[in-house]
Amino acid sequence: MTLVSAAILLFLVMDPMGNVPFFITALKDVPEERHRRVVIRELLIALAAMIIFLFAGQSLLGLLRISEPALTIAGGIILFLIAVRMIFPSEESDLQERLGGEPFIVPLAIPYVAGPSVLATELLLMSREPQLWWRWLIALLLAWFVSSVILYFGSSMRRFLGERGLVAATRLMGMVLTTIAVQMVLDGLRVAFDTSRTT
Image (tube, rainbow, N blue to C red; front, side, top):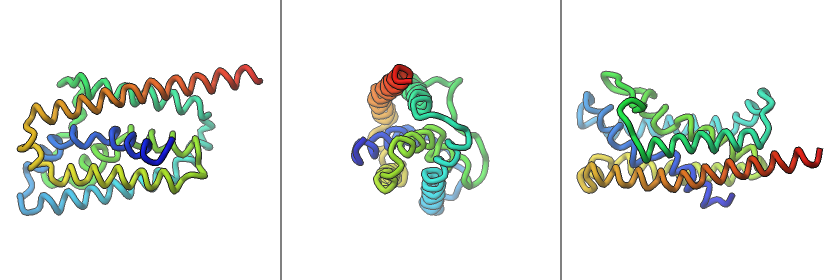
């Protein structure tokens, strides 16, 4: 996977367009003059968590003795479920946290930005080519930066696009993510099949 494709994948999984309404709702009890300061703080916390997991994830894989094909297939399934939820959202499966007061770490940093799907994607990238850690780090920084810009100006973007525009953008990203997820599952099955034939 190239740097650009990895950055796009991470950006799609972060789903900043879909998180804009959640950010606005979570900040409703926070004084308006503190909104942007809180958003910046939470985005930096999310970045720190994702970078730590990017490098610590390999140790976790070794501890659990998870093979690359298993991780690829599992990651594809997780991304597929996330994509389906983006395309067909429902009230029952809404992952929005309902906490009062000023949010700290939860829910803005984790799980809205640094969610399970992002962490699983990082694991997948590092397990395939750990020697290219610098590429995955740059891809993560690029995806985080673009997502941060969207979330930082979330209120203005919501007024510009409207509710329907945000929903349409989220569903479009979900459709792209669906194809990536299916390809990941197919790649994992191919590697597993080739390995079983050679052993």
